[in-house]
Length: 420
Ligand SMILES: Cc1ncc(COP(=O)(O)O)c(C=O)c1O
Image 1 (tube, rainbow, N blue to C red):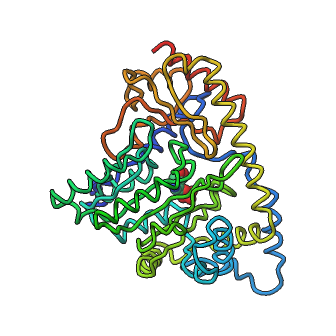
Image 2 (cartoon, rainbow, N blue to C red; image 1 turned 90 degrees about the vertical axis):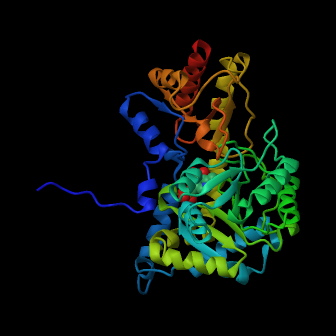
Image 3 (cartoon, protein in one colour; image 1 turned 60 degrees about the vertical axis):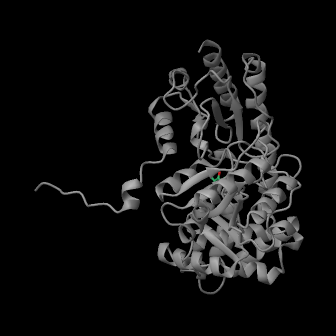
């Protein structure tokens, strides 16, 4: 019998295989390929002992094994309280503990929270303001939902250009498009991809410009890497704490996947707006009516007994060492002498490189192909822009490869840069 494909909805029609999957396939297809592309964490430092102890402790608890039962849609109450307590350490003015815990939702990675947040705010054809560069999986998600990503203007140093944003908002108003503007999104600490952290005055400036334009939009602050600083935290307060953002519906998102056990896939958020939270929870109920309860119970235990903080200290040191191995080898091999520029990150998992303007590093470029031939793979920077993407930027991830491989990958990369 011949098979007939279904007719797809507009979402189904827009859905295309994520670019990261293509990059990962390329990495796996060639033996010996060193991948600086996927933003994975370090395998050997995943917290096996902490998870083993937490699991054994759970399994030997007297009474019913509630942790193997469905949990609540919003997330385990004690876990939410522990997460709220942690947030209050960095943002003591974010709210009262009990209230904050009641505004917390635990999700299947913060990726699910991003999807829920956008799905309940936007229809196809709507617009979201995004940082420049931005988290490319978020950008792909917007494209998949038919939502337009509009970059927050930046200057040549990557800082937010507030006067240009004022002009952009005025032009949206003049063209009648401001009514389609539904939210603003930024990755504000050790960003993926740029490793840049948003200074507090820029974060406040964004709120002022929006308010002056009469656009008190929902804001999504993605703080996925906030706790992954190397030596000291980035001092800026979050949108939950800053008075300039008061009155805006605010969603602050974070995750335990980068800081603890990636595969447990526990993310979370705090939402200042009850109606927005209720809508996200309603749609989460449609998705899965609760994130993996067992994984949440493990996270609850390790946060409570200090194993989480111990792991965090370990990975901070580890990622700094990895960053330095990649960064210093690129320098030693002479990449800066070839006209490439980048900042040394103070946290996170990425180096963000700018090639000379004349060099095309995009997905289908000769440079990208030469890197693949040389056995090294990276994320082409143009994927990380909502619009007007430059074609000479590159994201390198250093989370996965061991130190020696990072050095070898850097040598291969510079060799290609020298001869392309
Ligand atoms: C900026 C940013 N936000 C959110 C996520 C989603 O992470 P998870 O779903 O693992 O919590 C990632 C993952 O790489 C990220 O880089």
